[in-house]
Image 1: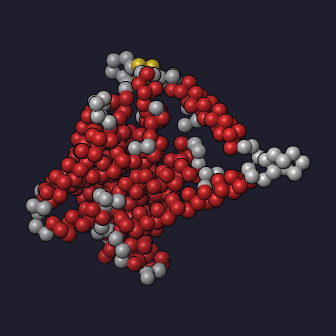
Image 2: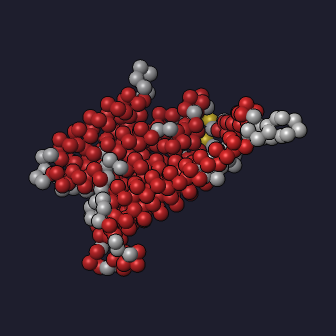
Length: 345
């Protein structure tokens, strides 16, 4: 297996220009997916991320057949899908997951049909589905950089609104927030994040880069801003290690990155300082230790602990929505006004 020092030398080798290019794209994709994935995990919409990842496939296939920019083709398809999902999911007779299930399967099948028209499509299809370390052309770098900046700017501008909608869409609607517009904006952000990542990690596995770093961060920290930064760190480090493993051991790039991120999740799930399995197991066992003088548990009972956490959750939700209530319905030309600073999220 190639040593890490040799890998660093290869990164500086002009004959292997595709390698630092792939690392650059993977890093930008990791940052964007980690930020957007925080809202995906907070809202519990991992299935939507998977659907969007499959739904951009027709745009990628059309761009490939026409020898155009895969990033632009995927962006167009992703934006169209995002708008369709947001509009159709507001039909009260159909639940959101039903609409998404129909759209993403149909879109993915359409993409397979389109790419089958290209000669030698089997190898190209494999690169689309599972990623390729050599699959990032130099002309796509500026488009990916601009797309990443746009997504991060959108998230920065609508951060509080995204949090409000992610916590409780109905309450956000009652507070006068434009939920449909925010749904479309969030779906577009997810679509663009997916398109940024699909060439290095693949269409099938891109959901892992969108969800896993945020899930790891959710186990490690409680505050949303900290969750974003931890997710970014996990995603960037996991992508770097995954590309190294892929290059050193001649393994698929996307699968290597996903395996590294999955390992990080397993470690966090077991050993997280507050929410890990080991800590929760020890805490549960400590509740069974009795005081010899009173024959009562030393620590609070499960019911008492549940009551404490329930009260704490109520205070947290109430304090959050008291800040969200500062939003007022928009005057014409503006979505909504803001008042005060958010000291929790």
